Length: 85
Image 1 (cartoon, rainbow, N blue to C red):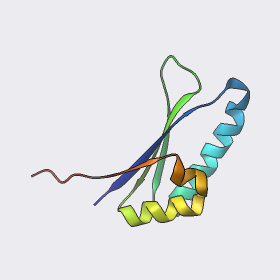
Image 2: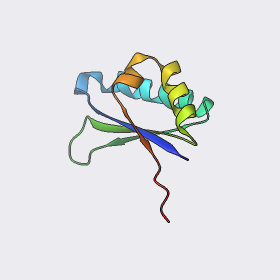
Image 3: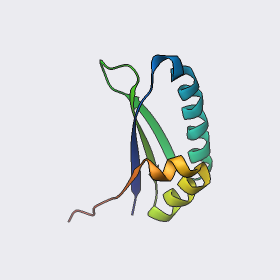
Image 4: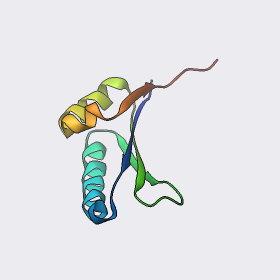
């Protein structure tokens, strides 16, 4: 059962370059952990981002988040795929 987590972040313009570097590192980390990572910016509001973290199951995502550090587990919510019949 797939799991996804998302985190909303607003980044001041002076910090966006560093944030993009961190997002690149996050993508590499989650990819190496068997997960996927996406970063979206709100259209019309530069600096307002939403990050998505996806894994094939809850345990894989939680393991990757723990390895990413405390910010990953305290600022994002975990959602489990609902099987529709």
